[in-house]
Image (cartoon, rainbow, N blue to C red; front, side, top):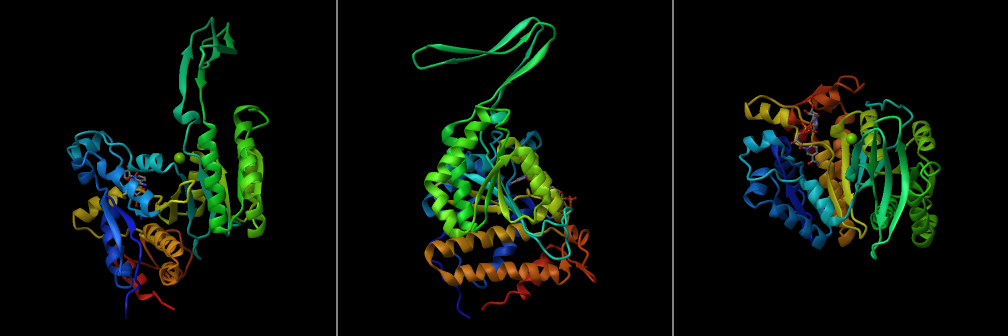
Length: 402
Ligand code: NAP
Ligand code: MG
């Protein structure tokens, strides 16, 4: 059998711990037997990030800009414990944060649905994709405690030094707290375009919600920017794709989401996305079945699993104990990237391979073979819990190429 050729490389970002172990197995068992895999390899494992003073992370993001598609393994974000464990020169920043800043992207998270695992909201028969605006608001705030007897004001100083003041509150009778938050028109516009582009790409409608009735300038700005960009740049394309842009208030959106069947992109302000993505992920079952893709406003894609490096399993693995780590979201990171590469290069065979591999994964689980996390949830009869490697071997057996 001849292998599927690739004309353009994928940017491959290797990572840490259990996901690094799985990464190599996925390539060896599921991809390189079928694809003449071309990648530009960057080792984002913590050891190499430390050796390169984190330059490798920046280089991998620049390469992603150049080639347009990347696939990333989960990576350790260092904390104090990791400083000792890896004898780090510095507490390097989260690679995902660095890459997101360079690509100016929005993260879309969507669950993989399989028969036998019913979401906690059983009517959610299609995935809900959450897009979180990962800039500003309370995540870049400035806050103070205020002693009784103080007056708090907002002060804006323009280029010429003129001040505009507005009262926040007169703390005449009590101590209190205040908070200043901001966002940028530019960032909101990038977020809107990323959502609308991804909607066209995946043929799903976009829902967006804020609290504009209460926040008549701040939240209203989000509403206006989305509406203006949609009308001017996307309305016609949405009409011909048969999808829609729907705006409502955040509390109304939450109620509608619960009643919905899924199958749309839910664009969320930063805090809403933080909170709602955890709720939605939990409701669909397992973090190990959640995919994640970073999409830049100019159409660059970086695929990964939403979960971390599964440290607890890795320490078991190092001790020689058997693990049953779910590789599904990491496999789907690879298939997402290969399919997108195929689309961009007009390489139908490559995209078809990605579809076939995804189908093999779903067929394996729906056929009753799964890792421990899913076995604990699945209602399928005669299910069989397998270890990390056995699962990949079973998937390999189920790959059917057209
Ligand atoms: P985690 O790796 O997501 O794992 C948390 C727990 O969730 C695991 O202990 C496991 O539960 C379960 N789990 C997650 N993925 C699983 C899978 N594929 N198969 C089976 N079970 C799975 O989160 P963490 O332990 O908090 O973080 C570990 C490291 O990952 C940290 O250094 C963090 O910085 C990093 N991280 C990276 C990313 C990223 O690169 N995108 C994202 C998040 C975290 P049980 O132990 O109960 O089996
Ligand atoms: Mg959260």
